[in-house]
Amino acid sequence: MTQDVEMKDHPTPSHSVSSAVPSTLQHLKEIASLIETVLSAFLDYILVPGSEAHARLSAYVPKEDEHEMEVDTATSAIQTPSKHLLPELEIYCYLLILLFLIDRKRYNEAKACSSASIVRLKNLNRRTVDVLASRLYFYYSYSYELTGDLAEIRGNLLALHRIATLRHDELGQETLLNLLLRNYLHYNLYDQAEKLRSKAPRFEAHSNQQFCRYLFYLGKIRTIQLEYTDAKESLLQAARKAPVAARGFRIQCNKWAILVRLLLGEIPERTIFMQKGMEKALRPYFELTNAVRIGDLELFRNVAEKFSATFSTDRTHNLIVRLRHNVIRTGLRNISISYSRISLADVAQKLRLNSLNPVADAESIVSKAIRDGAIDATLDHANGWMVSKETGDIYSSK
Image (cartoon, rainbow, N blue to C red; front, top):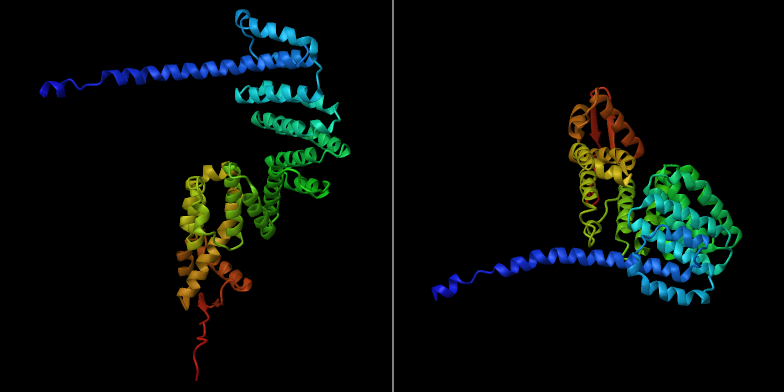
């Protein structure tokens, strides 16, 4: 029995695992090469050899060796005489090459390809091209956004939107309006975005995805304009209508909706932060909500510093600065409930006001809270006290 136990070593599985890794990598490389080959063959089949579109698009696809392409060349040669190039097929080829270049992270070439496709689209006025054109508009803007050159195409997007309006291309109008709003918001040009949005033609939405994007951008504009109630409605509707697969978009909608609700004085439900696949992304906003709910200004500052990189990436840092006032007001409300009379120095200490003259700041904050009706109290300036009014017992009797 000892010999059987001693012989139970397994050198073979380790070799099989190590050999499986390179074979899998090689298999993926073969798939990538096959995609390039198929794409090149598709261009040769659809486009007329020697045409401008064929020459431009073929330049982006790697050429295969002659001996590997003999069969495909022969096949394409047989099928060439029967070609009748349709504009829809040409635009579809542009779209395929553009996606290929973006996937390969060849962004500068993607910019050139997308610009050429837009020039071609301007000369086509066919309703059958509208759906493909809307996708090209999106990737045209996306390729410039990836290289940080989004401002360069703003004038061209406006011209395309005008053309789509004249041609009654409503899907194109939806897509281009959202791309323009995204372009303006990317550079914090909220006033210009609102002017464009308010003057753009209105019609029934044709694409649920574009409608969701429009609601999201509208919510962001309303938030910056301090119209929190309308912003909350737009953001929650965008998150609710968005497809389940669009998790990143729904996360962004929820982040902005959480901040808007906090600015309105509401505390979002815990279930919002526990949605499947969103727990990690919404964790900074959960801790921020907890600080606002407690009214702890020091905790609020710590959370803002801890996740400052995340808030900057989400471009919500300015909204978080606005929340400081809500944190102070919540803390002051808790103090007024807990104490019938408290000195302004103690108020400043409990609110953790870090300033040169915390007592004067506390006096100003208390005065404003009393004037706004946030707390039911009076201010004794002579003695430096905040005196809370006692709440009557509604069940008491004589």
